[in-house]
Length: 265
Image (cartoon, rainbow, N blue to C red; front, side):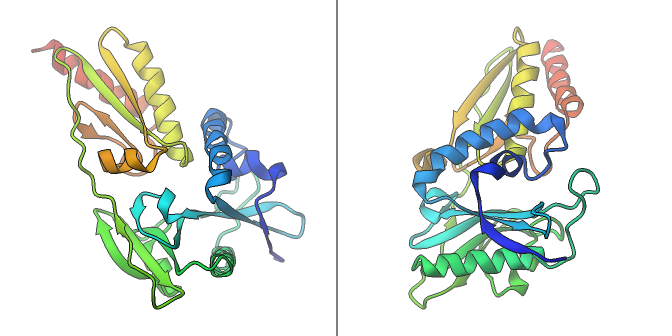
């Protein structure tokens, strides 16, 4: 497979904003929220690259922003929000296990070096699946901070690079007597978080007499610092978004269980 790496172009925005899963009709609304975030971030240093095959089909993507705009404290660095190579047979097909992720990472590193930044930081996961921290480590990144399963890694391009650190969680949901409270931390950057946000909002509207829905924007850095979060979905004091987005039926079951628990009191 012949792969070429290009900067994100407007004609690819729609598929980019649904993480190349434009074959999945349930993601359209979440993708529209992502596109709003992209438009707001264009003047704030957003960088993104796509991997195209010989037929100009997009098979992978990488997104990185100034660390000053990210959920990490740091300076003079860029931060990788996500890197994704399409891995399903549906739609455009499986592009994984072909070295595309490495090509995207190499292109991003060259770009960041050209910008004169001191290094490139990345969000990795301590488990061996999507965006695994160990994958970054194989490419020369070093762990510099950890918060639960979220690992912050850094590849220095200069000896003067200062190690970044995570903004640590300090949020506790304030409950409302007699009501089930749902709090959604909404940023717009992550399509999965957008999907959870929209699903929770829909369910809350179905039970509006018994559920209070609270939306907290974390687009601005000061909001991330205030709450110690970029995303997350809290229901009655528990963060229920700890990995892949829950399906509508799964999330509704949690809400109904909490409503029934209150009714028994």
